[in-house]
Image (cartoon, rainbow, N blue to C red; front, top):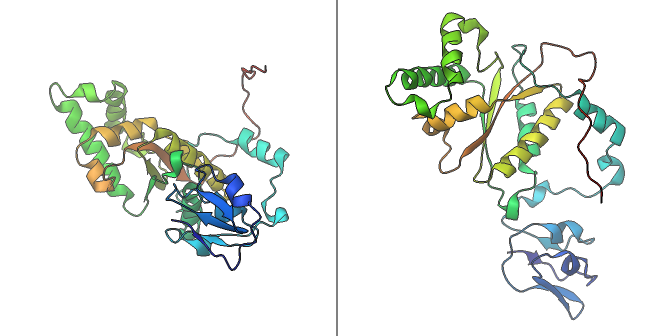
Length: 262
């Protein structure tokens, strides 16, 4: 439940105007909240006096708006998006704790449907060799079990053969130093968080590869979700993360955009 500190409130009405739940009204020149909302935080963000807090949230993390600190350069942003590549060749440099926290914050602050904030971010680096072994052993067991291979696409048979013959190629993991698994009941929430986390990674010199095959393996293999501690949340996005061991000299070409303007 939001808390309105009346000693700070000036009755400007901005919070009531921006409240999608119509939970806030202005009476006697003060804002008042009447019932529980879904705690989107817009009222706290729009209040010029800082008169609204949400005890359930980390209010110490709230930042004041300073235009020069938040303005994005559209040309530079578009260039970063255009230069983005799926990275399949990484150095062995680990991702630092500071970089990890920046990635988590980018995911944490991503919009979620109905403000559920329900994504779980599982970062695997120190125990990545153990995770890889679980994945490959699980794939092998599935492929060898009669009648069970339907849960895995036929491509996995080729992946497994390549892995057995050339384990140094690290076919599913591409020798990336870290893996991020994003779990959510809503696939769009996870996808949006992944995009913001990748952009944050790019700003720190990291690259990523969205690995749908690995997501499928995590969902299909017994014990993997327990090891990851996904609980009741569905693994939706799996990202390989690390510093690219390759430099691209230019952007890749694209088809013309399919656009309709009415």
